[in-house]
Length: 205
Image 1 (tube, rainbow, N blue to C red):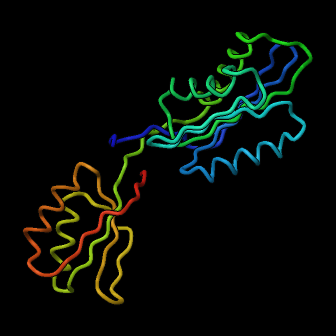
Image 2: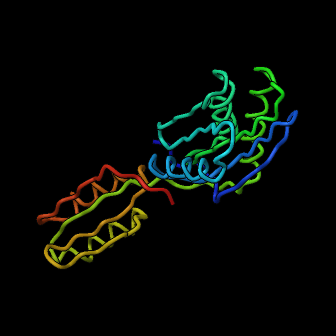
Image 3: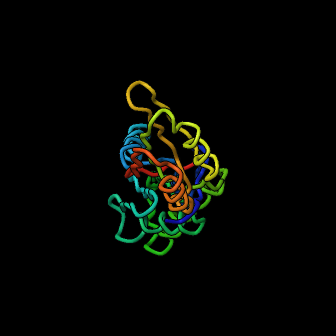
């Protein structure tokens, strides 16, 4: 797991005309496929009378999906992905909507138009790097509270939720590289019952 990802910070739009065709690029940060599909559907609804709604979304670490949406194979979706990869960004969706202007561009120029629209859309956004954190939860005895907090602070963990209603527990985020040292400290410093569970969830901050 890489330590950081590069993301866009907000929604952007860019318009480009080529031989009568209007290309509208839209980009939005997303953290999951449901949000990506929802944004795609919103774009289709917004530009309901457009000829094509081509898109690509990429979600760290390995979810990538794109579509030519009726354009010649290889001219749209993969070109949008190329623009995304060129700027090394992830956790986003880019939609390029096309209003056909009556003049066929040809495969080469069409692919360039989709790539250019996607790239300029992304260039208009603000980029930032976010750290990747692993989510975990630890259950412990009340008398271990001070030691638990000491260990979490030592390894720069971020507390998300503390629960003292039944058995005490703390949900937290930790940098992947700090997880094993944190585990070792808990094993050596906590002499009574405790349970550390590493969750199947990562978060970006």
